[in-house]
Length: 299
Length: 328
Image (cartoon, rainbow over all chains, first blue to last red; front, side, top):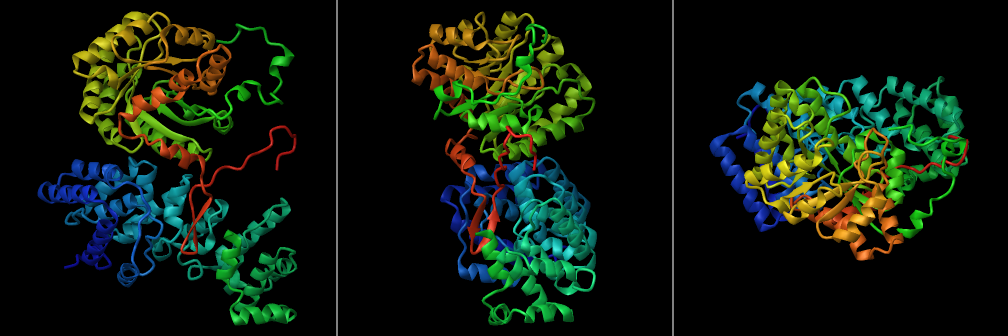
């Protein structure tokens, strides 16, 4: 039976993660995890819980996990957008281990997590932030997530920003906008941000246009993917900027401008796109899309 | 520390050439088992990587002035495990650390008690290769108390101990450090006695401990003296480090010493032992060092692809040309 503190079927997810871990781990690692789990269930001792969280990579190793299509589908059905691809086994095992902490006493639970965050090393931090979509009382982790976005450590930023459904679901608009801008500043692949289109907003569109002007004034380039966020906010105020990248000699910028024109509701933009029927046709046929652009950019 | 040399205009000019010693050690790999990178700049990381340093150990120590609260210790320890580790990885260098309460701050009993309480949270972390640097400074009773307590901690965790030996009354302080470690049942092969000199090395080696030497201008070893030590004592259980920190020190001390040893006719195999292998061996007893990781750190793939998604792996820092007045 699932506990109310969790906003998803925690039992099923925990069981499924446990299966994936078992399929990826060797006998020794699996036996150790089982033994630690039994001990934890018997004693409930917090120092033992923390020590296991820390020691996990010593036993599981850090190989990249493999996950079957069936397991992937099951996980997606239970937790849409939750993403474990590319994770190492120690990270997955740490995330699973967090699910074994009892939720009977909320303040005790929060204290344990707070302490784990505050004394975490680099890979522990990445595991903790990766676990955000699975933690109970989801609204309790908003401030912690905003704090994590301020981190300067690459893998910590990635754990929060990329393929993590938590921020889009729970962050208030200013914190969300900060996440997107920090992702841009730290060269993250923007298409990897879960909820990038859904959480686009007028304030962020404005910040991005100002940012583009700054970059241009400094003679620096921009990630063409940022224009995607403007799709629903094209108007008189920023059409000149869309027109500017439309005329860019860089083909990815021009394609980004074309995609914005094709998807926005602003008539002059539609008219601009119509001046290049070949490009328009490619977009209609789907041979140019934000996905193809993303592939070009990350190549 | 300054004022020993008369400075001329020439001494103040930046280097505009690649130093000749770099050629002598081309292709060699170094492990600096004692260097305080939190006190150093990114230029130092870059220079260390260029000179062949593939991995290093940052011992926890004091910060030039005493701390007043346990939280600053907690933040310091976690910066060694977090930010500093990431910073090193950006230059392809694998960063390890040792965690401990240093001897100077052991003299503040109230604070020392609080630090002892949080140490167990940190010593089991990934990449913590020992308890250190601990030992004596002034050789006070409080220093002894916390040195002993931390030896017990290391014993329980099965971790090597990195011992700081005092500047003043060094010989006796070194002997006492070893006696106490043995008294607590630690094996000499689990103990790295640091900051040795010509006066201490023989006993340290005879008793089966690791002997580390710090190449640090004016106050510790010079590298010409180091060459003589290796010629006399060989390369078994001896290791060289820079202990570079916020004082006048040199983060390239290990590669420079290797170059000088090479120039002085010391066998390449011996050089490799004292500037790489011995330190790796001593601290790998923690179970936390995997040499294969050095190559991983050195070949960071900026954007690993998975299922069509690019997953960034903490990209390396771009290089800037220092020989131009233009900054972009």
